[in-house]
Length: 221
Image (cartoon, rainbow, N blue to C red; front, top):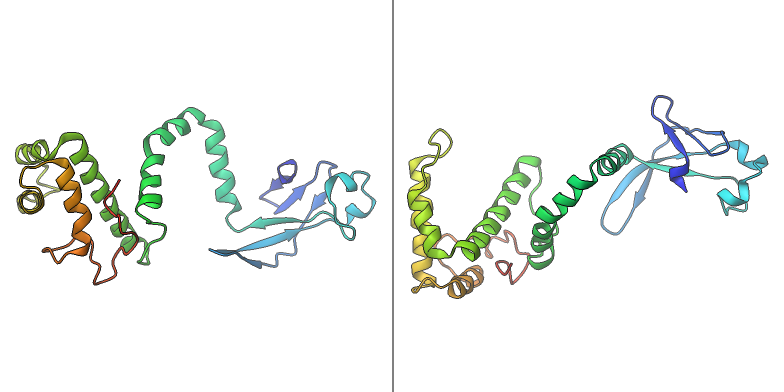
């Protein structure tokens, strides 16, 4: 197992359980998979030829044990260390956030981003989370309570303009009036599901532009 080999970042080498050093030439190799690719380096030692534990370490008939280290290995190792040192925090994270990502990825089909660059991807993801939060708020509070809370909301006007609050309220009230005259959650959900196929105003799902063309049940979480 690779976890039995200790990596030394200062010398960029591994030490095996028998105390031998595996080094690399520094050559980068590319590994391509179905969905992605990454660069990696190979680590070997000539000591494998006479090692008494060779048959327990590798099944290769010729040569010796070879370790591949990904260019992202340091990030993977840091994440594993964080998990091992914060198990209770990790469990809490699973309870709070994992179902959200599951809904966004599995039910809405948001498995990849359409845009490139961190600022654009952040904006794309922020829109997805805004829709999720709106859907959850409707399910928890109901449309009437949501509208009343927006009306009584006193935002920090250093961060949110009065026009933004008015626009948000007008948009939600107009939406409910068009799709849910009696303000029932079921009809509201039906409206959210239907909006992606309509020409209603400023659609949250812009099918004509190809923005977020992930799933036909985008608002079903």
